[in-house]
Amino acid sequence: MEKKVLYSAVQPSGNLTIGNYTGAIRNWVALQDSYECFYAIANMHAITVRQEPAELRRRTLELCALYIACGVDPEKCTLYVQSQVPQHAELTWVLNSLTYVGEMERMTQFKDKSARHAENINMGLMDYPVLMAADILLYQTEIVPVGIDQRQHLEIARDIAVRFNNRYGETFRVPEGYIMKAGAKIASLQEPTKKMSKSDENLNASVFLSDDRDTVIRKFKRAVTDSGNEIKATEEKPGVSNLLNIYAAFSGKTVEEAEREFEGKGYGEFKLAVGETVADVLAPVQAEQKRLLADKKYLGEVLSSGAERAFKAARKTLSKVYRKIGFYQGE
Ligand code: TYM
Image (cartoon, rainbow, N blue to C red; front, side, top):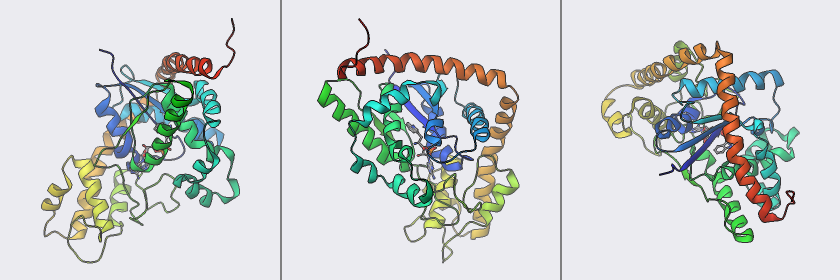
């Protein structure tokens, strides 16, 4: 039986955080045997915020190495760079004509980013969810493993797919989100009601996948906790809840098990344990990423064969779309 398609991507737009790992990449690895997986490096999304060209190029390769270092197997999955498959831009243009400005203006991420980059509210920033819909729909995707912050974009992708199918006849599979309970929403260590983000200006707020052991432990030691001394995941304790969540995601235990483990212990001991657990998981990933980055030829081969495979799949869908909407494709 043919495997169902799974699609996901990360932007090479900064240092990846442990949220990107637990919310996305880690789950990709767990799913790669059960699905036909496409994992992209979303560099076209990245340029909606100003990027340094040399850095963007370097981060693209680093992200490829990171995917593999985390356990994504390029023999099983299609790993590629978004801009190397032109159908993403082409389908975006078509879908743009089925998407309303009002819908895009309502997107939480657009509103957040517009506030943060008031000097650069460009069309790409607003169109970002349509490009993401094109990514997903090009591959007739069944499931999309993402963190909670991408849920709204996924809903729009589904709406656009349904809208297209209603207008032009069955063309796109309507995708489902796949959001794991543990680790789908890692919060900032400094402001635990906000999500942990690659682009936070406060460097103590985010733990990066590239942070060395001492840095990881130091950041957790400085993490904001809450008043009281109980180590319990409750709404009144967003700081402690976040740390318990991180601990659970990185140790493979449940939050309840973690609560029991730290019962009666102090915040200091707890935060150290969380830091050590995270650092233990990151160390082998970092070593493997470094090893892979020394072999640019291998990474280049992975990405060019990935782009070729993605291109073939994407071409099929785009040609169908062009036929449906009445674009001339030759005699
Ligand atoms: P990006 O690069 O912002 O984030 C990549 C993935 O990491 C998840 N994530 C988190 N999960 C838990 N806690 C956090 N603090 C946290 N921060 C980020 C995100 O939910 C995401 O799964 N638009 C996407 C990239 C993209 C994409 C796609 C994803 C482009 N095309 C098609 C899925 C399908 C993005 O910016 O992710």
